[in-house]
Length: 259
Image 1 (cartoon, rainbow, N blue to C red):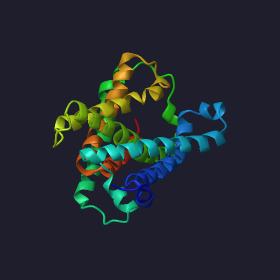
Image 2 (image 1 turned 90 degrees about the vertical axis):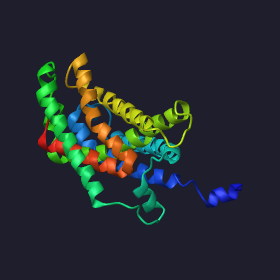
Image 3 (image 1 turned 60 degrees about the horizontal axis):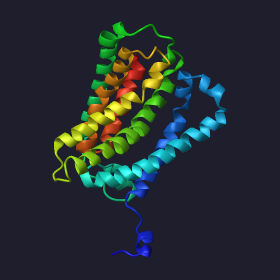
Image 4 (image 1 turned 90 degrees about the horizontal axis):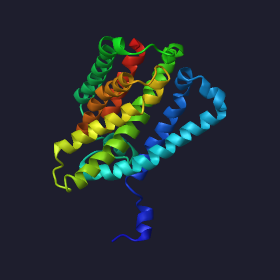
């Protein structure tokens, strides 16, 4: 049994990884501000710019550090992890990987982005009410790409590492009774629940564009779920970094091709 001194000399194996991602997430929260202000110019009028520049990164840092540490700790029990960041932080050799896997992550991101665009144009677009405003109209491409960086890093950390891991672990402990190997349905449920939560989190943005009628809710949740299922699968099978790559690429497609 380790002593208190031992624990100080050998800190939690997850703390530094969580710190690494918290810093990265805070930087992307700062980088996304030009895009966020283009979507919602009133935010700069309601709060001083200095408050946004300091407050948003600090809030993101705290959420990712605390949630990420918990996600890494719980994920250790069910095989969900951030293997490349862990190796980098602890100075270990990088885990086995292949260009093919990252290539598949890129391909999945492109496919998800194009699928979302097609669904928006041909399925949901004709059913939507008149738009109150076009929030994305004033966002230059470079601002959208900064938004993609935030999506690929911060949103993946909060949605996959925190929410998906937490839901999957809870299902495994309660419904799966801690059986090993973890049943696949437990992972799939965690993937879908995290995807639904991610979609619901985009409703405030949708409410700024349309009246929040049922079709707008369905559209917002469904389109976000399209990518989330694929990203969650990559996280489960190959690690968080593959999900980040796919999410970033999907966002680049959406912001460069346009919705």
